[in-house]
Image 1 (spheres, helix red, strand yellow):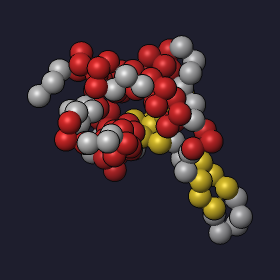
Image 2: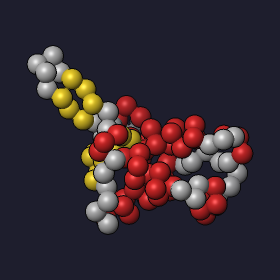
Image 3: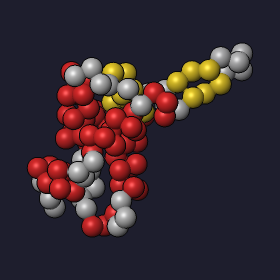
Length: 102
């Protein structure tokens, strides 16, 4: 298993992919019975699944781990590029369910 330090090699576009994935234009929208539209922040788990599926050969690279990816998201929040939108407990809490929006 590769270490998180190898992410620069395994996922060279990770920062760009992260910003694009969490962009508000990609946020899931739902329509209420009253006709109101709402957006839901996407989670770290959803990003991990997206990154894994995006690979040409998913077995050739390590599955992205949530803690390093969440740390990158938190840095982006610090720079004002993303907003933290809480944690969704359906993923068991922790960093998997942390939601972000850009």
